Image: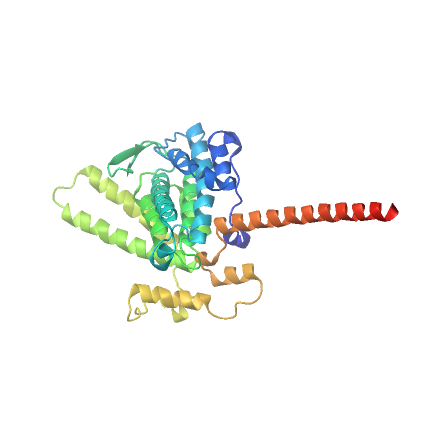
Length: 345
């Protein structure tokens, strides 16, 4: 289980879609800047995806697009290509700035469409979720396989935006989309519980999201107390059940922060953010020597794990070094052969 949490998934394209969208994804990640335009085409594969059992080509294409875009954006986030504020922005020329801004817009759209997929996972019927243009967009519920993959990609973005820290918005938005949607599946809840809730940073923001959802649901119920329709009550009950399922699967103590697991401890003077920074400081403190994977597992911070983008970049660097080594060997062999021939002559 530890290796699954600390090592990202390899870039694997589903067998059922080895052409078309999958080919675009491979070209995007291996073709350099000249293939960047494939981002828009892959994002289109995530638009208005309709399920109906999980076996259709649209879902297979969507999964291939998720895998490719996850790797692409994670790697560029790690390099800082989507963060153009302050001194970094001043160092970019006009062309590079335009490209960075364009990438930023595509990244935001990617996150939005991932949330739409998380909200529309599993089951029968139809799911309504806010579309890219701000209006209602209707989705057939997609399969749990697609939903959990979309959640996984969201979490990779959460630890790639600012390497070494946890970006809460992608995770919180996905959690909100899942619990307020019409198809919160056991598979999706299981993925949250087994893969992410054990990490203190993800767990902290999950608690914060649950609190806000409870407050919002209570406020809506109070505002509509007199004129509430039956379907409104059913909707609110569904959301409450989903939020309870999340809460029931969250670890009940912050043993890595509150002394003695006292969940009733008063927050620090600086409020919630200071609370979390103190907890993260404890996770990052101490001896950083020893095996990296063991240390990351012990510290229990999702943001400290190796991202998909980092893994892809490292793999390409290793392949390049291996190829360079092979070329050097060939060159050395050719030189040795030429020298031997000249000596014999």
